[in-house]
Image (cartoon, rainbow, N blue to C red; front, side, top):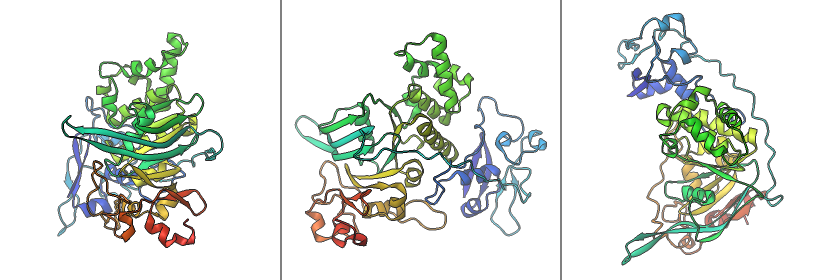
Length: 436
C-alpha cells in the first residue's frame, strides 16, 4: 500500500498499483506528473505543481492542498475534508481526502507545457579556453592508524573539460568519487596529482546536497545572500537591491529575506542556497545532488531553476546525481564514474539511448519504471582501498573477457568523436564498427 501525505494529513491511502496507475487525490496525480522518466521532453521545463507547500505554522482553512489544486472550488475552503472510501464493492480498501473524488476530471490537468528552453550556444571542446579543465587528477585519503595505514584511492586519473555555458552531469554509485571531484574543483580539498584549471577570471561556486547544513543557522537569508556582496563596491541599499533580485530570480518572495534557514521548507532552503551561489554570478556552478532530499515536485522545480539560471547567467554547470533521468534533463553531456575513474562520457541523449559501457547499461536498466521491473546490478563495488587490476568493473561485468582482469583500457573516442568509453569488450567487438 501507499500512503500519500500532504499538509500534515493523509491525502490518499490504497494499494500501490491502484495509486500509481489511477491516483484519486489531485496531489497524488501531481506527484506522478512531476516524476522524471528517461523519455521525457528535455527541451522544455519539467512539469511541476504550482505554488508552494503550506506553512506548517499556519495551515490554510479547508483542504490543505486547495491553494495549489487545479480543481479547487469554493466548497474546498469550507471545511477540512475527511478520508472517505473511494473503492468499489469487492475491491481492496482505498480512501482519499477529497470532496471531488468521484468527479471524472478530478486529476485531469492541462499539460500544455511552457515554451521550449532557448537554445544554448556551447563552446567547442579544444577551441577557446574552457570554463574548467580537469587533467589527470588523482586523490587518495589515508585510512587507519599510524601503525597500519592504507590509502583510499578516490580519484584515479580523472580528465574532464567543461566549456562555458555547458552542463555536464557526473553519474555513478555512492563512493565512486563524484563529490570528491566536485570538492576538489571547488578548492575545498587538495589533490595529489594532476591539475585543475579555470578560464580567465573564472570563479566556481558550490551548492551542497544538504542546503540546511550549508546555511549559517543564526543568520537571516538576506544576510547570508548579502555577505557575498561585501567585496563589491556597493552601498547598503544597492546590496539589498541585489540580494532581493537574487531571491526573486530563484522564485523566493522578498519576505523570505527576514527568515532564518530553519523557518523555510527544504525546497526554499535549496533555492536560497542557489541565490547565495549566484548573487555574484559564477562561471562554474557545482551542484552536489541538490535534489536528493526533496520530493519529486520540489526536485523538478529545482532542476528547472538550475536550467533557468544556466541560461540567464551563462554559467557552466557540473551536476552530481545518482539519477540518470535527471542527468539527461539537466546536462548536455554525461560522464559516468566507477571506482574513481570515468568509464564513459558523451552527449546525454546518446548515452541514454545507446550506452556503450556495461556499467552504464546496468545503471539505465535500474532506472525505476512503472511499466517494467528494473534490473539490479549484481555484486558490490570493489573496495577503493584495493581496486582490482585491469578493468575495475570486471568482477561485476556479465560480459567480461579473460583479458579484462589484467588489461586496463583507457578512455577511447569512438563514433563521431563526441563519445568515449573505457571498455575492452566494447573495443574488441568494435561496436557498430566504429570503435578504435
